[in-house]
Image 1 (spheres, rainbow, N blue to C red):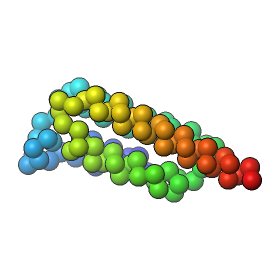
Image 2: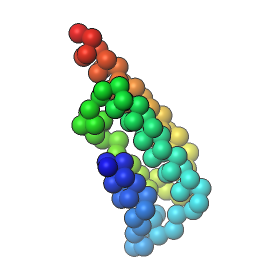
Image 3: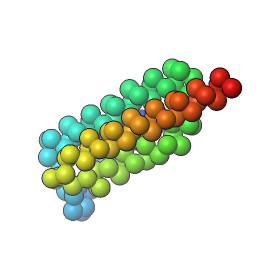
Length: 104
């Protein structure tokens, strides 16, 4: 449910009055889709390992995704890779912390 909300707000909703969001090129849409799929797949893996969705939500990743299209300009698509690396690192850190919590 949380992923679908982030997708709806961060990808599907468009603001014709916003300088960046008035027009979104196909390549940026593609990068945004890759990012939400990364978040979904990685979060799903963590949930299957027993990590509560509340812990994933506390990382702020989904809230950030909802604002991403406004923060990354249409000619700054390389910033998606930086963000995706950040997502991977934060979720890996969460997984490691949770693993240590359970084993102690």
